[in-house]
Structure formats: structure tokens, C-alpha cells
Length: 143
Image 1 (cartoon, rainbow, N blue to C red):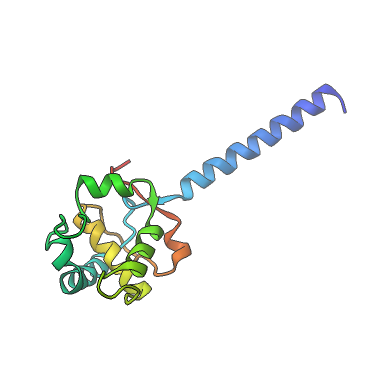
Image 2: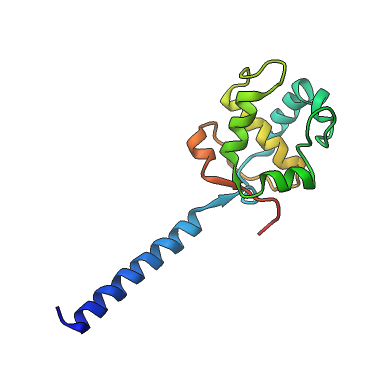
């Protein structure tokens, strides 16, 4: 292999890697990309009022339990996956009945949390599947 051929092979490999990196970055979603619907957030807010507000406060700013809205929540969850948040809710909440929420209810609650944190709604609901939710990053600040 000549030096020129080696250089061209290396350049081609670099360009492929760069293209893949750009495609991956474009495919990433965040909580600011309209990943829930208004209807889903409304279901989540109703569920929140029924099962969560007594501990997290009616406006999600905390009480006997940590806040789900505001700067403290934002800094705790910034750059983590929405899937991690949904799983935390599903497995450990409500505190007096852990593991009683369905995956759909957990997704609805995450939608309500996003709405309460002033993130925009979109055309499609957050999916209940953990793997799909793990592809979405919770971002505290709009990019």
C-alpha cells in the first residue's frame, strides 16, 4: 500500500466517522423537542393531582417529597434520560404504593412534569416503552 493509498483510506474512514457522528447528533431528541402531547400532559396532571400532589405539592414545587418542577429538579435531572425518570416513577412511586403505576401512567406523569417545567408539547405522545424513552434526554435549559 502506498502512502497516498493509506492517506486516502484514512481520510475516507474519518469522513465516514464524521458523517455518522452528525447523523447520530441529529437523531437525538430532548425534552425541548415536543415529545409529548397536551392530552397526555392533561392525563398526567390528573393522575398527579390524585396520587402525587399530597407529597410533591399541588404545583410540583415540593412538600414532604422533592420538587418535580423548578431549578432543583432541573439540576438533578439535567442530561439524564426521560426513560430513567419514567422508570424511577414507575418503580418507586407513589411512595405508599410503589410499582403500582403502569408504563403508560409513568409516561403521562413525565409529560405533566415537562409541561409544568414549560417544555413545549408536540404532535406525538411520549411512548411507554422504556427503550424509546431512554433515547430522549431531559434538558434543563432550551438548547
